[in-house]
Length: 198
Image (cartoon, rainbow, N blue to C red):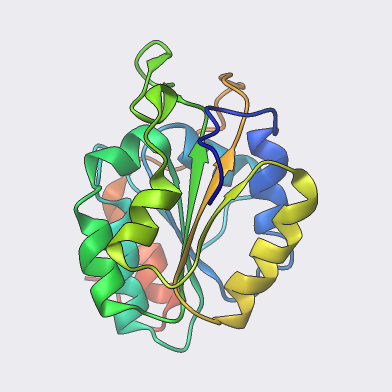
């Protein structure tokens, strides 16, 4: 895996826009805060499931969705702080090993939502290594934009469970707020999957 890299220089919005380009029927679960804003900035979509006030839950929601929809590619887009809150979930996800699930951790080494304090990742914890230790069949650290299209291709191919830590700049771009009504988000998402709202 190489040396631990803290933060990076990639533009978070450019990374997310590339990941979601030509997304087709990709289902996306977002971690709270900036990853939700980044996904919204790339374009609202009926298959975006924005999590509000559910810190640490993005990966487990992604696991449930990937298990229930095995023929659909599922992508979790979250931040390093949010994923550290749910680090234990990585072991369960590795044991279940859904081939259609990818987890992208946007890692700026900071808690962007609470004042840019250094996060665990900013102090040397590398989530790609944690995922590998848990048994993920593929994990990697991405530091260059040229490597992002291959992540998009991996997601669409449903070629196996993976986690990628993408090293982004420590910055807070203007917020692009997605819908905040949880019932609306849930029902819109269910309808997009072919289920009646409830």
